[in-house]
Image 1 (tube, rainbow, N blue to C red):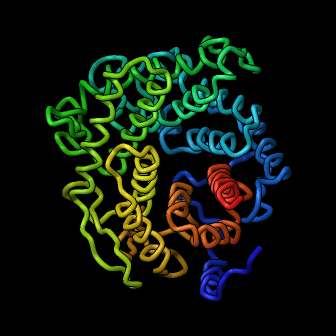
Image 2 (image 1 turned 90 degrees about the vertical axis):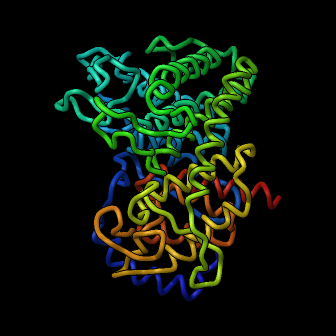
Length: 418
């Protein structure tokens, strides 16, 4: 492996004391499975890297309850993505089967599907038992829920997309059986995921959060969360992520062209709204970057939430049909690599997109959040920078989402170079 350049070496030394403190923010808490491995940042994904990932996910069980945003931005939702990325890199069916296990448990935990004994059947602020995964715990009544539900759909639909992209699997029975009654074959399982995602969009999202101009807004009373306000950008992208994956699944099935058209229109309109509200400026390195707020009228965006906007823009760009250009992505990439990673306060990277640092969500990180790893696909020279930061801060050993994204991009780079 190539040694880090001098500036990166200095950076990693400045971060080392924070790595030893093992300070964990938000959802990046260490996963409790077997230790994960990245043997090298170059070349093909290795047998040891695959074996370590499989051992890890065998150890990690789905949570008993599906509330508290565990499938929105918690580790249970992120491990679904990790499995999907590793399956893309390896085509290892055991990994896909474990992904299906997590997807099944996520869907079965939905409020209207889960029995009361398993945390379901809760009345939401609409006064009804809705098809949602309540962010609030059972002690909160009525239960809350909003557009962040799109993130749960995106995780589950990723499993459906992988199945639907591989017709050779369709008529085979799922190796691990059908404990939740969602379909014996791989295709039947994928069809259930797609059908139930449509239920959430049609019965929760469209009636409550899409205005006549098709922009994502929260309703007024009885909703008490940001009444009549536009969805914050991070939540907006959680919803576009789900719609993009749902559109892709219907496209693979070739079964609902009008739904695809409608979902794609929502994604395009709302991503355009975001793009219309960013300000261009030059980073300290002279590259084009973006400044923007947390929401339409708000404070400067922090790097906790910026991770979700980065992921959402990447998914839209990678889909290739939502008007997200290479120039758009480069501005976002430069904002992260040249402004955020290029600015250090007390051993931490900048906590806001303009290079400043505050408190709480704006307190900054000493590692690279998993969603940002996609950005190294736009600026390939930053892949080893990111990888070395994750290795130095020991995130690789305990974070399946970080490790899987690194290995997914490692595989992508290797196959491109062949």
